[in-house]
Image 1 (spheres, rainbow, N blue to C red):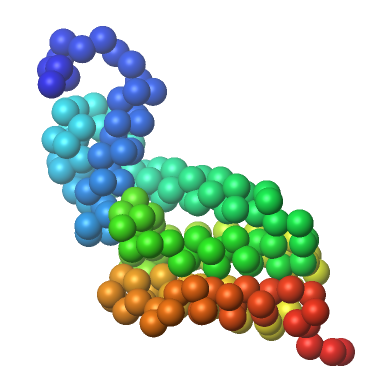
Image 2 (image 1 turned 90 degrees about the vertical axis):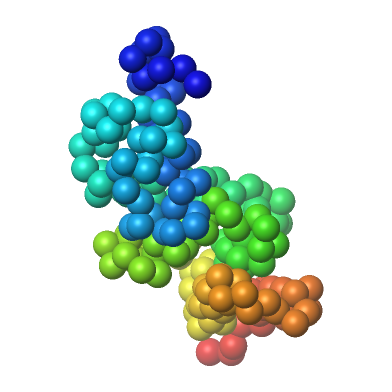
Length: 187
């Protein structure tokens, strides 16, 4: 490892390394459980160097949350792209991402655990989800789609509690079926 005192200054690389190490550490304990010293040690950066990039623990937590939310938003966009049906497209992608294999949760587990345990991040998550649904208007409105999104959130929580769906494929098919226009309740 290169000494923090002798390496060439590369602020973007250092910032990215700090975020990546914070995410790795947070995947086991949640973002709120991070200590600045743990993160600086893991990244091979002095605590002062970390504080140069993130002036407080809250600034680091917010940056980790933003980074993970950007990744999640990109993953949602990728999952939505091949879907030809606009009605419920966001909800189907949201559901599909909630049904990933447990081994694939490591990085995002920091995000979900933190949303459950940190009121500040819970509010931010809620605002993000509300904004995503509102952006799509009537294409994501109604109790069936909302119910599927709540089911997806419950699936995530179950995965963290090691409660796995009995038949993942059947559950996915059933919930996805509720997201198509022909499943809308008559007015």
